[in-house]
Image (cartoon, rainbow, N blue to C red; front, side, top):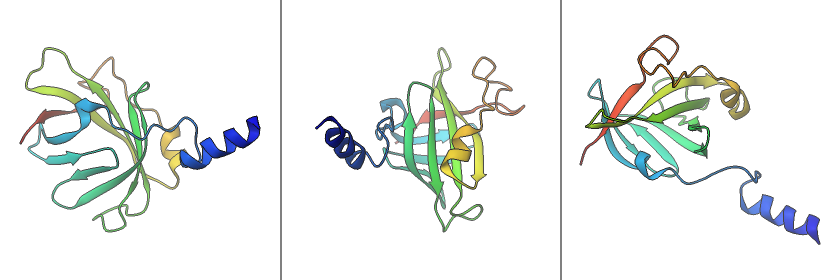
Length: 139
């Protein structure tokens, strides 16, 4: 009976008991980064306007990253996998949080998840020598 319940749980969670499918509330909505690029983010889709989409397959709120499959219609790296690390900011209003594209062209979701370059202790250079992109909410 226990094995049956575990099998059913795996089936209904998309194959993983640990995959979180909901975005943290701070990441949901419309945003603009430091470079005036706009984004719309929800539980399943990260859109970098005007034409890049990332289909989110996993949120890991505890370790602050997400894994996504790049849309096949993206201008670059279509169909590959991305890891986006993020962190909340304090005393940086209007910027609430920032992100780092740790991987953007990994061949598999597992390969993207294995890449760990983000250094949240140093957000000014913690994204492979570059700053985390700061995000502010827009309507």
